[in-house]
Image (cartoon, rainbow, N blue to C red; front, side, top):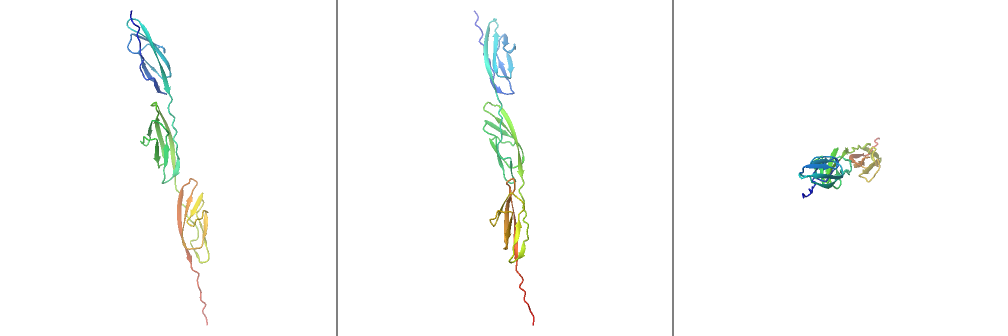
Length: 219
């Protein structure tokens, strides 16, 4: 009496979406897979249970089954401030995964960037599956305010200094308005903030001219 064969199916049973695996029933005289294949090995790209019945040299048969799993690809999302001011930087974070490969060459979860451009990361999850995401950063130019106004004026009078139209103002006098009135000589500085939150400064120096002191002469 010949014993029935006891086949074992080998192969990677868990694979990434879009990939496939090869299932091998071992060396026998004949094969009949649940897919209809009659070869020693089959390639599968779906999740499911696959059964093979093998026939040995004595004509005896035996069966084995395995179940495959298809793992979804990760879908990373890059977080971070994508628009920032010239001279500063932003941090881009790809989220928590097993591995990272950025277009910059970095292999960390997050990167610091100080330029405008498109940044891509490919992440690898615990199943060895990969997914990618990209973001584009913008660098906003700093505002360049110019203070207008009469810088030389007569003692006893004043002048108005105007910083132009911006979202916010901080003068060296403590004022937070677009324009200030000054009646002294000195240097006045303003730091403005634009709609992007970027800042820039300008300064002017005022001069106070003494009043003439006429002298009336005569006999």
